[in-house]
Length: 616
Image (cartoon, rainbow, N blue to C red; front, top):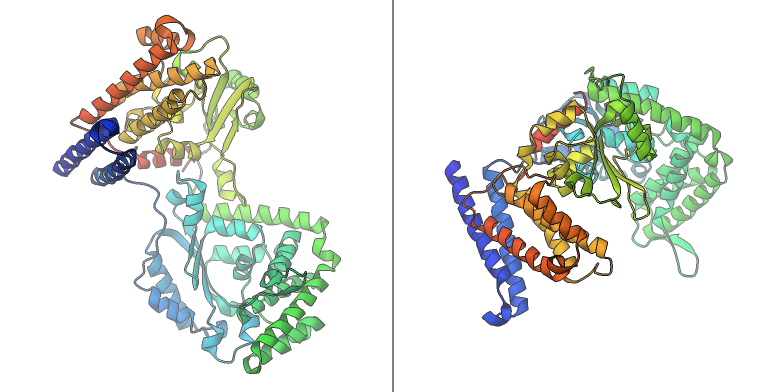
């Protein structure tokens, strides 16, 4: 593999030199149009990125968050079983077969499968005669517990959210925490899965059965959000015309209409304190709902299906209006009690289900004398003032103070890294905020605070400011966990980090050359000194060394003069020429290298550190 990496390095460096040549070409002198030059740059950059990816694969630095992916070998057979059965036709042998196929599809990629349910619409079944037709819109609903490495992964919330749901239309697999949040919001599909009929339950664990017993349908349906959401969704099959009339949407299927009746049925059952949501008992329905049942049963043989749909829509609107008129739909007192009970019960269940008896190591207690840390957190203020001292991993002052380039009127810009209690993350039934920022020209004290997961996510993306605080050892406060990560700082001197530094320099160069901030000498000079600082760091990084973030000696004197002196040799024109020369020199040195660093930082290192922060 070493030979392959060597060859990949040689090719990449050749491509780097080609891109540098294209970038430095003068189109007029070479008879090349600007359009052709830009196209050449774009193509060369794409090729370079592809080569970097290939090298990262060879050196195994391409490890990243990998979402769960179902094995497709048995999905065809599984789909056939799902779409040929209704709950009443399922027997023990079929349930065992489906369970086996589901486990085979997951192929050991999750911690556990908690529940497998056949979701159907009892109202739609009334409109069909044949079992195959009744099962046409079935959904196999699966709840699974992801591996801890997935749940705590240093990936952004959108990626983790997308990885929590596998939706194949006929199959829907939901991760434990995603399901918990959906249930807390009263989303009907999750409610239907939890309180399905015994016949529709293909597989369930004891944990699932415990939740079903502790969190009844009436508790969930007793919230205002649930009832209003059901009634709002029920009218989704309608559309308001320009003339003001509310009519059925053209092309609406009988299945969607039946789904709307099912939603109304859920609300009516909740108001009647009836927890049977799997069957349609005409004798227990209101008059308008009873009429709808009769009409749905006639749909199969109805001579005019379009007319029948419109008649059903009229009955649906009438039923929705009747339910909305019931004062219990917007009842507030019981709503608050139910919501609190749901959040508490669900939070406890989510935690115990994921941990499976595993103990969480508590945060290490701080020495009695930590009054200085408390004072700093109070000074920062906002949400930071409420964080317990033992949760704080790092407090540092970023910006010019970090670089040893502070001047009397420099802002105080704190940067905090903290860890939320693991129990808070495990029991959350809504999105947890993991980042707080308070910055602005008029702020006396600015700060950015990042939860450990968000910090790792940004660190793996090679955020320049976060790399800088890891590269340096001079902080206001750091605990043992931060110090452990700091031992591996050299692992984060990578080609990706170099690219991020160059990207920051390039963006600043655009603002400098266009004179974007020339009206403000202070802000304009800030761009200059930042670029000189980053170029100095790159001289070290390109050889694999941790850069000296804090400047001392002649280089500090030079950069301070750039920041504070404006005449003679420190005039804007003079230092701009020096900046261009240094920028070109660094890019040439990078392109002329015969070796390269690892392309990406170590994902597994961050993952292991995060798990240590979680006490697992």
